Length: 142
Image 1 (cartoon, rainbow, N blue to C red):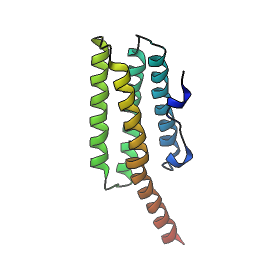
Image 2: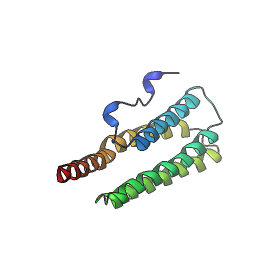
Image 3: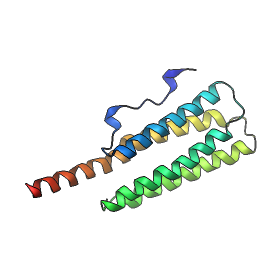
């Protein structure tokens, strides 16, 4: 197992909402588990992909709640990205069920790139928004 190919959580990826940060770390772990399965030549990727699909549902729902409760203006764009990503992962799941031999590498590259880019770009946008909102609340209470 090549640990250098793993997604590694870094403190700068934090969105400042502990439950979401925990869920992001868990997503990194699931993708790393999938990386392990692929690198070991496992032909049984279905359970890990199912775990990923299920966890995405939980995580994206929680993120949506946080964004809606804070009236985040980028919610619709963010939500569309979540939807599109989930659909792509479901396509990978269907391909895996059909026995696509080339799936592993394609899937892991896509997952790593998407999760890393989404976490460090779009998630940071709402993190900054939440931080700004908290600062405004604090300054108005002072």
